[in-house]
Amino acid sequence: MKKYSKFIPFAVVIIAFLSYSLLKKSTTLPAKTSDQAQNRTGGIQDVPSGFDNEVYTAPQIISVSPEDKETDVAVNSTLTITFDRAVDPSELEFSIRPETAVGLNIEGNTQNAVPDFSFAEGTTYTYIVKYPDSATQSQTYSYREF
View 1 (cartoon, rainbow, N blue to C red):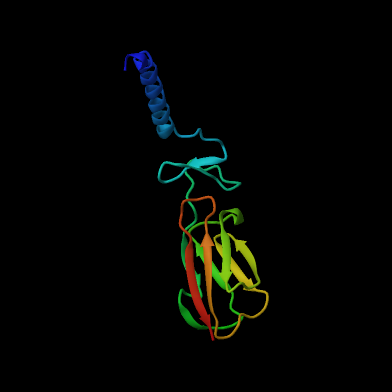
View 2: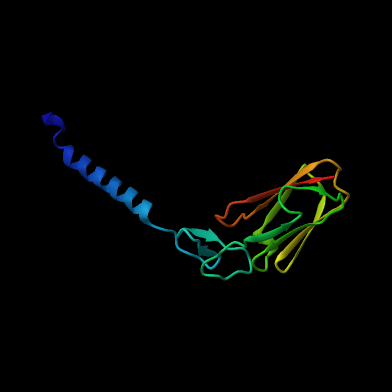
């Protein structure tokens, strides 16, 4: 034990330094740049281009047409999603299953998904709206063509 006793103070210093470093890392937030904002939980997130908000809030869906789980929807229907505010295309990701060619058009607070061809009869379609730059969870809707 005596031959290792001179290393004990050195080991205590190393343990103290490592503990301090880990504690400092876990409590230090990254510096905010002009392309970032504080989200609702206090974390830092990227802000879509064109937004200088101090606190970024993703757009919220207030209505969809056809309505979620609606049946007997016409095969040439346009999907319309209405948000609580004007939307920048960089704020959203839209996908539909089964995969179908649609033209997306965002105007103000409305996004329209117009099918390039008629949707298939008797098929249930599911579409997802994602918010890539936000902690906001994606939203999923479905409807069935007649």
